[in-house]
Image (cartoon, rainbow, N blue to C red; front, side, top):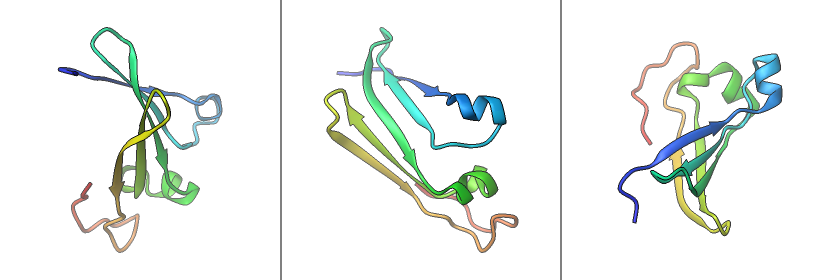
Length: 90
């Protein structure tokens, strides 16, 4: 049972050195700092680098055995990455 979670993004070396966006990975921990879930963001390079704050993505959350327990989808909700016109939904 979880009453609180801590989400920690794992920074890729390539992302830190070059400043380019890579697929994000997260550890989801309990209040004791123990990892209870692991999350991976799936999207395309185009979305990550050009539409970063409003990009579409799928995040798959798995438990420590690797079994997927939650999938979060966010579609791209705009006519153009440069001129967003819709509020985002998850």
